Length: 227
Length: 227
Image (cartoon, rainbow over all chains, first blue to last red):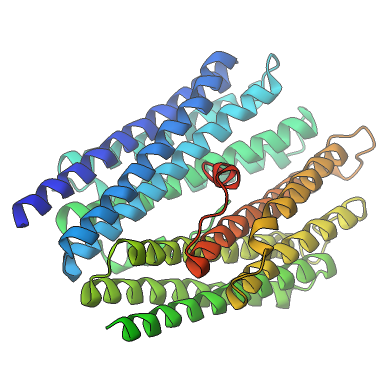
């Protein structure tokens, strides 16, 4: 039973790897579509999001089946719950990538991101990609310290978001109300993407190592918000 | 074992009722603090959010324990997973109420909501409260058709959010970039609150009746997004 259980847990981990890679690719493509005004790429990000949702449903079904047939004990249960949490975070990262793509679609063929914001949005996208990459690394290599450093990248994202607002609210802003709203929303989407990635990374660390990250990080994790 | 299991499921439902009531009260208070510029009430909404987070952790612990000790079969498992989904939605509704309160806090003692937006924001808050009330009603009275009508309220919220953007982007807008960004963010917070309430309501309907809402509604539910 143990071997069978381990094999099924490996299957669940494999779905998570697929989801993490898809969520990373989605935000990367969304950023490209946004900054290069490419509605075809944006549309693909939006339609590909269904596949990520489907992976999440598949993972939940696997967890149900495993619980129903194997009745795992408490510590194994915790691993399965970690998998559910990770899948939920990855699913929402996919949603956020689709939101970014939709901002570009709505303004196309005009640019959603004015020249004054291109650099900061590109930096936020860079941090988002760095955090997303670390999630996959944690799954591939359990002993990676990457999970523990996710919080630092998240701090960088928060600072970039503050800088973004300084630009949007500055006296030099000349790009109008609509671009300001789009810029603020985009900032929020990248920042939320990073938050979910950090949460996913911490649960992944637990899933792979069976150990919790230190309480300071865990405290950051709770109630980090939504929307 | 069955009686004990039913009693524990009742306990879980009770935690959900407490969370639903708290999430509803939080958004109601957040709206009051926002529209009347009351930083004390806003601060209380923010600090009370910890209690909602704590209820969610308690519910997850109950579910773990129940799974570990009772090894429920598939249909009962589904009920427990529904409870986990509902708790996650309610927890995020609490976060969104705190976000609304924080917008008011950041601009206090100035008004975060200019006169031009007071009416539409009050309407959005009204719909949010109506949806939140229906969630509690579904738990209290399983045969209520309320769950099935949640989608209609959500449509109303979406229309209000569109109207909000017409105002923000209209030629008559004279309230500046910062109020426009705050207005757009507030619109998003109320709209996301309603989305989570709709999701929670559908899972609650299943938790209480064991029946799924019709597939059309279920399709709406998936991938409704984040942030």
